[in-house]
Amino acid sequence: MVEQYISSFIEGRVRLRHPFLKEAEAEGSVKEVLEKIPGVLGVNVNTRSGSLLLEYDPETLSKEDLLGMADNFIQSMPPVPEKKASPFLKRAQCIRLANRSMVVTLGASLAFAVMGRTAPHIWAGGVFCALNLAHLYRVRKCL
Image 1 (tube, rainbow, N blue to C red):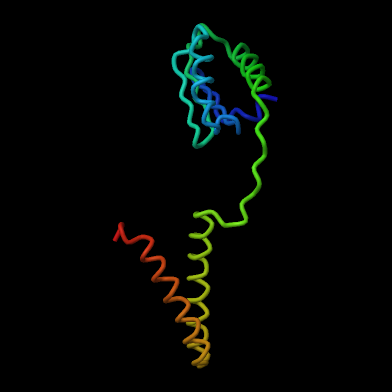
Image 2 (cartoon, rainbow, N blue to C red):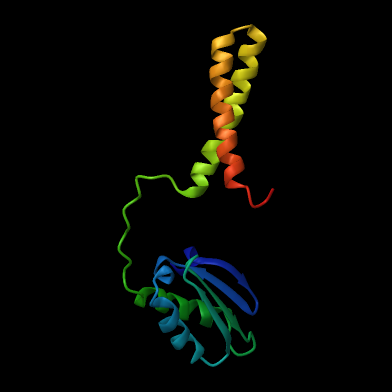
C-alpha cells in the first residue's frame, strides 16, 4: 500500500508524495512526529508539491522498518476530501494551447498563401499575429 506513495527510495533518503501533505497543517505535525524517531536525520515537507523528504541513518533504520512506519503513518493520515475539478484551464494548459494555436494558424496562413486564397490567408495571419502578441506580452521580461 505504501509503495504507491513512494517516489524515490535511496539508501539514506526516502521521498513520499501524498495528497495530505499539500494541506497547510501537515508540515508542522509531520515534521514533529518524524523528527522524534531515532535515526532520522532530517525531514523536509513541501506542501506545494505534497512531498516529504526523509533523510535517515541506514545503520540505525532498516528499509523494512521505514516501510512499516510509513505504512502505519499513511494509514493514520486523515482522509483528504477530493477537490472538484476547476472548469477553467490551468496556466500551463493555456500556454500549451496558445503555442499550438500559433503553430496551426501560421501553417494555415502559409497554406492559404500558397493556394492563392487571400481572405483566409489574411484571417489566419491575423489570428496568428494576435496570438503572437499575447505570447510576447507573456514573455516580455525574458526579452
